[in-house]
Length: 327
Image 1 (spheres, rainbow, N blue to C red):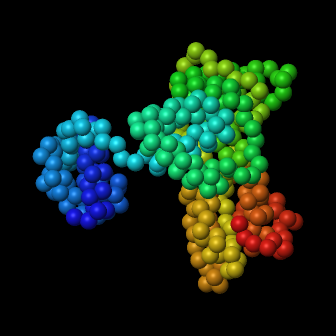
Image 2: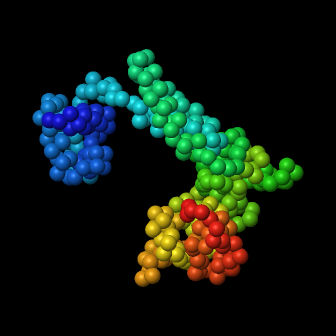
Image 3: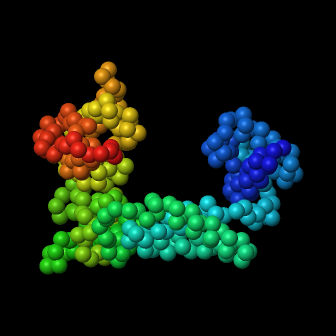
C-alpha cells in the first residue's frame, strides 16, 4: 500500500470512529473525491486491517462503517488546516462586527491547539501564521462600512429566537421601531431583512450601519410562511432590493471580454449564451440597478445592457473605453 493510501485509510478510520452513526459510501466519495468503486475498496481495506469495524444498516437502508475504538477517537492528525480555517473565520467575523461568533471560533481554535503537545502547538501556530500572512483575502482589502458590534450581536440574538427587535434607525432623534428579523445579509453594505408589522407584511431592508441601537426583546414571533432567505436574495443583484425594478436583465459582453465574463457568476440563476460573433449574452431576473451600475462601470464599454430599458438608460452616459484591464 502506498504512503498516500495509508494516510487516506488512517483518515477514514478516524472519520469512522468519530462519527456517531459511522460513515457511508456516499460520504466517503464526497470526503475523498473518489469514485464509488474506490470507496468500496477503501471500506474493504478498512475491514481487513481493523478487527473492530462494525457495518450497520441505517434508517435510509444504506450501509455505514464505524470503528468502535475510543483510542482511535483520540488519534490526532495534523491540525494546520483546521486551525487555519477557524482563524480565517474568526478574523472575518470580527471584521463584520460579529464579536460573539469570533469569540466562539477563537475558543474552538484554542481547544484544538490545547490537544497538541506544546512543541506541535507552536509549530502549528507558526505554520498557520505563515499561510495567513500570504492570504490577501484575510485582510479583505477595499472600503467597507463599519458596523457596531453591539447592534450585530443583538440582531444575531434576535434571529436565534426568533425574537422581535427594537431598533433606532437613521438618526438619533428617530422614534424607535419594533421589527421581526428574518435574515442578515453581509456584503459591502450589510442589511437586516425584517418585517415591520405596523407597516404591513412586506419584507424591508434596513442598512446595518444606520441602525444606531438594537435590543432583542423577549417577544417571539412566527417566521413568514414560505419565506426563504435564499429565494429572497436571488431577487436582487447585490444586497438591496427594489421590487419595482425586478425584471429580466440581459447583458451582452463584447467578444474581447467574453472569455473573462464567462469566468464570473453574476447571479445564481443566470443563463449564459455564446453568440455567433463571439460575444456573450448573460440573462437573469433581479432588481437593484444601482448595484448593477456599480459593477457594470468596471467593464467600461465592453458590456452593453440589452434589457431592461430603465437600466440601459441609467448607465448610458457612464460607459468609457480607457480602462486598462477587465475586472
